[in-house]
Image (cartoon, rainbow, N blue to C red; front, side):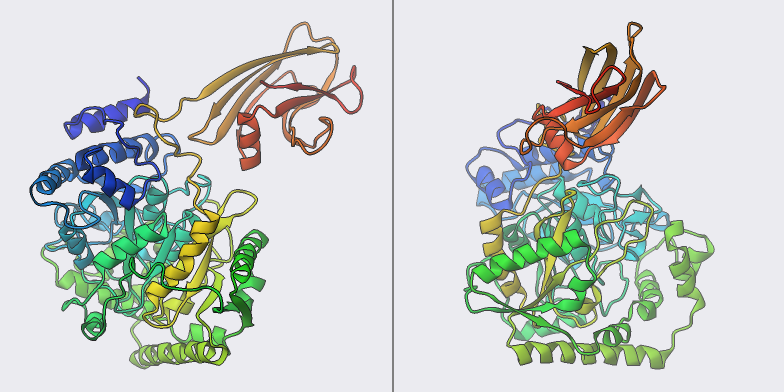
Length: 619
């Protein structure tokens, strides 16, 4: 038995489940379709839990080893069974009744540890749930697992001392964004129907952009942050990441509102709720005006910029006017309005002081015991060495109002419905590197809503997000603006490395043995092609009967748009004066597609061959 199949069997035994029935496939399936299947008896919540657990077992610690899940909820199946029984008695509570969801591991959960990604809180059980967790449970959701994050939410590459680095499912060599990178990778890989994240600067939006998801940083005060381990109470927000606009709207409708434990939500006592789902068809694009913030485009990676330009062209074709804008003194306003550095230590200390039996009592203790990943070393030490300057803090808080005033003045001047710019101007970095390019402070420092919308992919297959920023409490309109683009362009594509399971298991690795014997050149090549690791392994040896000097054995792709097969080389397998070679190739999207379509060829160069070489299919 393979290790992957063993783990799937282990989860089944641990949760006392049999092989999940294939009445529905949760892969890329939206909330409404899941709920319809539950309502008509096609499936049960227990079966949904089983199917998601099978995917987690196959892909989170095995295969691509995304490392997005911190802990499985040991009571998930039991809770699902209770909700199945309740459905039969009294019907569904909401569209989330019996639907498995993922929770970022900085949300308090009383029946599962809340780690904040850190060994400091590895087995910490809070005494109360986060408000948004309670709202999800009241709606009938099943919490299936807690997801990894950038430790203490203090970064955007999602590395933490408790379980390490989460990988990006669209390129497992790269970071998934952060700090809600575990939620982003897990939702993209269909480990749950939706997932909850938090956004202090870009921690919902950046993982959304990097995982081909949609995610909203809500207007400050729209939803409660009570029970989310704090980074900065002034800038902290919480909310869902989803694979489509409707799923995002469904969860938002069920998790917003006034909470007496969060003073910022007091504004909701005097406001009507946005009604996200009902508002999805509420806008007419023709005649709208978008302000394109030019400096973010000038600084962008070409693949990011071109993909967003294509999306804006589509909006123009629908009658939207795109106006190039600048926010006066933007750089100075942003640098003068951030408060994370002022609030982190005090906020976390206050959280610990109000908690029952916390494992540590202060940020100083965390630093003294080095309870963090080395990636956080400078920021954590700085947090305890720098004393709070009350005057500078007050100036930063005032700077937030100045920034919002400046943004709102541009909205009024140009009669804008939204501002647009890249969610993050650069592609995800290779794991271990620092991530540049964030545009997150614009919304975070002003408290305005911002929606990261998936708009396509770079030529190298990396997702791109376009951010729509609106006026205060214009959140629902932002989703309505995104909905027609999603319907017309279908920007959502699942990660290649986490495909649908077949009989509860991932696709097997394919093996291929090829012989070449032409013009005195004779060799044998063995290939192993793995979808779930996106890897092509090869082992090539010249045969004893080889009689010609071989200069190079390469692979090419037949692109089908150029006559002949004299294509440029994609991969060198063997060079001069070499009789054997082996290695691995992390496949590009074009190569992977060509290999599956049997459009990959050897191109061999030897003394017995013309200078253009000789080609032969590898299949």
